[in-house]
Amino acid sequence: MITKLSHASIFVLDQDKALDFYVNKLGFQKKMDMPMGPGMRWLTVGPEKQDLEIVLMPVVPGMIDEETVGQVKTLLTKGVMGAGVFETDNCRATYNELKAKGVQFKSEPKEQPYGIEALFSDGVGNWFSLTEHPKTAK
Image (spheres, rainbow, N blue to C red):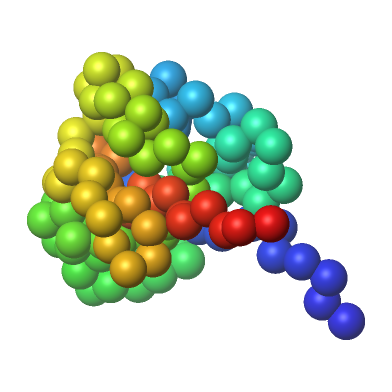
């Protein structure tokens, strides 16, 4: 029986640039950084209180073929890879904090049917939703 998802990968054009962004701008922790054979590096990050590790996966031949490498690099270069949703307790405050650190936002926080959301880019081809879900009455 599967008990949990422990790792999820996002493709990045530059692992060092991605590591700098996720650690120094978003405040994530580097979880693992080790060589994995010729030209490969296993690099994971994540928020301190999260067990799921985000694998910063380079776009290189080996796991995918040359043609697909080119296609993925094109999508990343265009900045059109939507990689996920990061939750926050206060979208507007987190937006201001991250913007002050140089994070590039595609949209300012605004009310959506599912909460308050702002979109940002990681600078290596991916964009994310920063979302504050509505508070539920208890």
